Image (cartoon, rainbow, N blue to C red; front, side, top):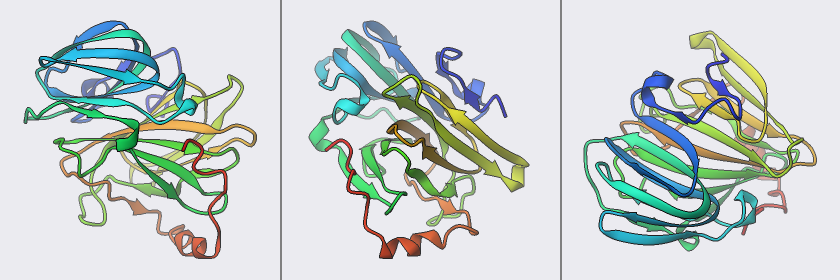
Length: 267
């Protein structure tokens, strides 16, 4: 179970080989740096700061929020087989997925990001859709989630480890957690009766959770808002997931509740 939860400072990047899955790559780097996408399509998501990316004969300026709670995201989609350079002073998440097709670069501005208020009551959270299923990518999907203090997120617990479209598809996923204060924490559960897994853990700023299978859900500690960035990849361009059948009834209960008025946390 410890191999699924990587503590801040103990990891630099996660590759498909290290994770034991097929497609998904995730890392965080501080600009300036240079790299190449190789056999992956990549989304560069600016967590904080300003940077310029030079790649594929183009140049793009990204950023504007000081940190993840300071505004909406800027991102840049880059195709496979693309060298790139990132200049400036910024913290950048690198979300990648092994792919076959070489598509076109796409700049994703804050106004391009769809905000969804999901859930109700103390299960209300903000979803920022950065790379959606409709986006012109082959496998990569990226969302960031803001959860107000004391609220539940990714709830009811759901999974995406069986190919049963349209209700569920197989997706590899990472959760990258950030908090505004070093003492803040959240509680993460990841469980799979089929795989004999039941992990409940305290997560803190900079931790990374790998989700190869199983139901998963998160709760933000009282007094501290929570951010996490999800990168996902699979064979289908869908985010369809199956709720834990014992807890699926909760969705209908939301019909009688108002969304938390704190959401959206970042308009």
